[in-house]
Amino acid sequence: IPVDSEHSAIFQSMKSGRASEVKRLLLTASGGPFFGWDRTQLENVTPEAALAHPTWKMGPKITIDCATLMNKGFEVIEAVRLFGVSVDQVEVLVHRQSIIHSMVEYIDNTVIAQLGAPDMRSCIRYAASYPTHAWVEGGGLDFAALHSLTFDAPDTNTFPLLDAARDAIRRGGVAPTALVAADEEAVSSFLRGDISLNAMAEAVMEAMAKTADFAPSCVEDIYEAESAARKTTRIILQKYTR
Image 1: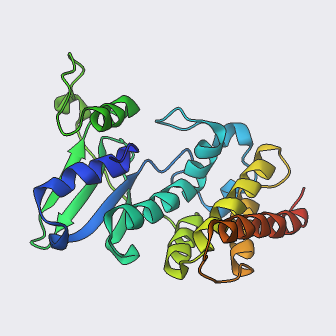
Image 2 (image 1 turned 135 degrees about the vertical axis):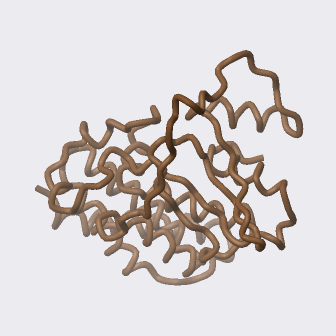
Image 3 (image 1 turned 60 degrees about the horizontal axis):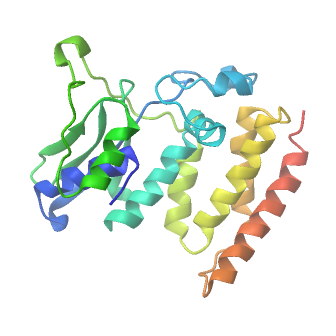
């Protein structure tokens, strides 16, 4: 049972129809702290600014990934794997209020959404109590207080790592493994203050371009690909060090 809020929402919304009737999965993203910024503005942001997520309180790694939309890219890969859809059936929408946790569009163009306060306890609770919903006292959504829910297309020119994830799942094989490893190295470098946020994305994409495509035949192949991607990324990061 998925525990992440987006995949829990899709899991629940898919109960409205057959898997064969699903047209699109609509993953919602908060947009992070730099929504609406361009690459010039991102060049000098500090790790402290990137860690100031507007909605969720998470660890440093995931928070930085949210700032670059890398985390949403990982969620695209997870959705493809979890729900057996193609990457082209997974769309990302920036939803600043974080009330709609994700949606499923069916072949008749109807859309089923799962809504709730931005609280990870809800999806964890549902996974623990499935197939029933546990009773919770109070705390329901006040729709009148919300006023409106907004949606925007992600800016993949400013935040290219979302498309890097799409490319990785299309390539298949060890590409998603290499992406995770390269991103971990780049995020660590950014958090140390060694590189800019823009350089993070550039280094990851350069490392991915140098990643060999092959299908792993054993677990050792996965570890080897992960190690190779880390080494490649570390070398690339040296030229971006400030």
